[in-house]
Image (cartoon, rainbow, N blue to C red; front, side, top):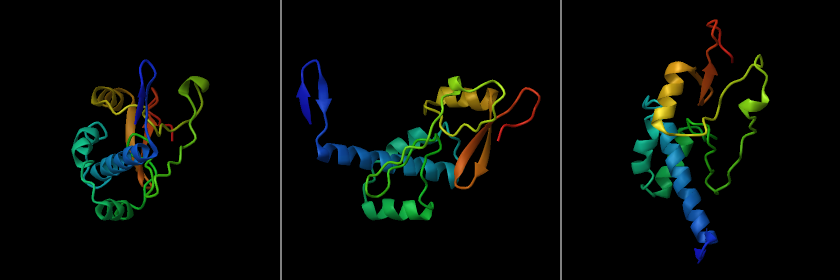
Length: 146
């Protein structure tokens, strides 16, 4: 890491590699907790914070394979692959959509439990969908956007 006063710091390539590895472990554990153990999306972050420190690469690679190599965690954030590659999913801001457009929310933009609980309770309906949690808006008339 290099640091310059008033300009912050920059990670070395080794530092970046270590950071991506931690992010990979964290997001795989979030996915596991959500998909295999039934934790709610607002619960997984705190538990994954503890599990991400298990750094056995064989375990993490087997976990990834067991889960079917998921691309995103329960909050929609991309999971780095075993080589550290991150595939960013295409995103569209809600602000750019018209009121009547159909959509599926696949990325929350936060993992803070207070927001996730609020959204789940007031606005969202969770569904399982091909290896990731699809979150659908519940319309005022009771129909769902899929």
